[in-house]
Picture (cartoon, rainbow, N blue to C red):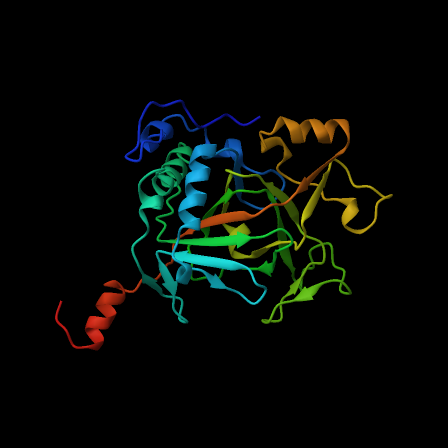
Amino acid sequence: MPIPIQQDDDTQTKDGSRGIDATQIAESFPALEHFRVQNIPPAAYYIPDFISPEEEEYLLRKIEESPQPKWKKVGTGRRLQYWGGTMSKNGILLPEALPDFLTSFPNIIERIESFLRVASSAKGKEKMELGMNQVLVNEYLPGQGISPHEDGPAFHPLVATLSLGSHTVLDLHHYINPTSPSPPMIPSNSSTTPEGKTIAAIPLAHLLLMPRSLLVLSSSLYTSHLHSISSTAKDIIVRAPSSNAEGEDRGVMISNTELLGDPDIVDALTRDGRWVGERTKRISLTFRRAEKVLKGGLSGALGKSLGLKR
């Protein structure tokens, strides 16, 4: 089972809530390798209970209180927000200030940065540095998902996603290489991207993301793979594949069972061979770094266009 990274702390925040000092927590981080998801390309790390239930409630409330114009709606009806700025068509971040609820209590950005830096420290290994400058907030209602996609080359190949409110199952996909096919190749069920790349019909892996967990994707798992969430209101997790069930009732096997830190799910899989979870509203916060940032921000660009001196 994972080593808990949180410690009891008597620090009180400015709003009266009890918080956890990121520097103190960093000293107790186990090695990042402890959280690596096995048997998938390098590298994915799953950290359960990265924040407390009180911090989760606080973040959900602050996001809910965001100005309505901050929410954008995509074609499927799903809503999202961008904090830290939006991307131009040329892949350049038009920066804006990040909100206090991400930069102060509960110190989420500092905590993730500290975790990556300290937990990845090992002799002969380079420390992971994210240097996040944008946070993508996605809202998923029960039955909403997102098709296989890449986040694109505009971002550094290291992202961290915090799940709030509900669990979900993240599916990881790989492309079929026409010169060296990677199994399983089932052309009748596979799909093709607008660039003409063929996606393998069966996902490479499934990850169960529980509320308050942090998922870190890096290296080729970010740059040359895709991820998606199925449009379902219920997830069935099984210990082993079943030939009796059909369709979605067959369930999926997940790759991060040993890292879940949830005895109820582990007991259900051991006792019944399956765990069933009903989705509720989920908010995900994806922390990432745009490689190119407009110098001076929007105000600088506006001033330059008007011929103003800085």
